[in-house]
Length: 342
Image (cartoon, rainbow, N blue to C red; front, side, top):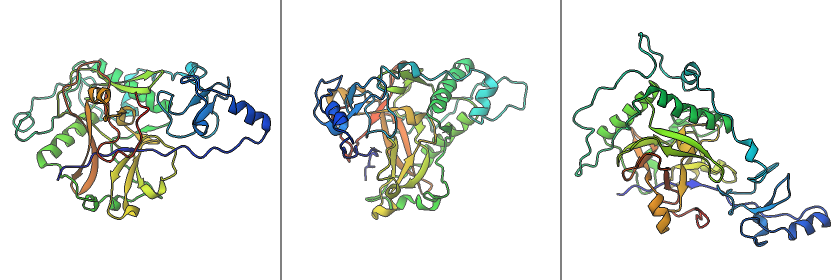
């Protein structure tokens, strides 16, 4: 059975409630969106808390999944809030990502990996997954890690490269891939070894060739820092695992389906707002339009790995250096309306 493609679950904007005073109500009714110059859909029209300009949630780039809680500032007023760069100091990078320190005289990242023979070569028949190919320059890898550290620090998250199970959320025993409605594709032994190889490389500082960049329209986003071959494992989607029922009204915009169970109360999602890796900053795309399909270069697929559900982002074509990474938001379920996406 073909695997289902997961999606990022997002919530709809809460219903609009009238302001307490007639003056505020009058001001809101006459406010137009600065992007589309329309006052329609006023339940999704935001007012900047600094300049009072209006913006639809779906006209912003990146769009907002729902009306934010607390203060909100428009792109112009928040332009000076661009995050500071993470200090590019080797010892800080090693500590931030908890890399394995070398016990020998070698410098961090200076070792060259031995070429692996046999099972990791792409085959048209078996379609084996490939490990990522790190940048050869160790200084460049430090810059890649610093870019991710900057984004994580700015968003108040800490680095994690594994699914995490916290007290009060779903336990690890709940992640049982056999509970998937309709079944789940099992990752082969050979591809599992490739995934484990990617994890081990990252623990040693042999980083995926990815750079997190800050875009005033899209926010934090990810670009390929070198050529990436089709079928390469780019990253795993990780974060805290929780029951979907606990997150139905969550205003987070990066939750990912982990398990769609026959019993909805057992369905699981990944919440990367507090613990996450670079997957959180890779943007989704509306893959049901011609332009969206042209931009899409990753596939988001759930696999059963040793009996547990895991989510992988895999290159679905050759990706050139400097190309921005996008994957399918909707997949086969088409749960989230992406009509306003770029």
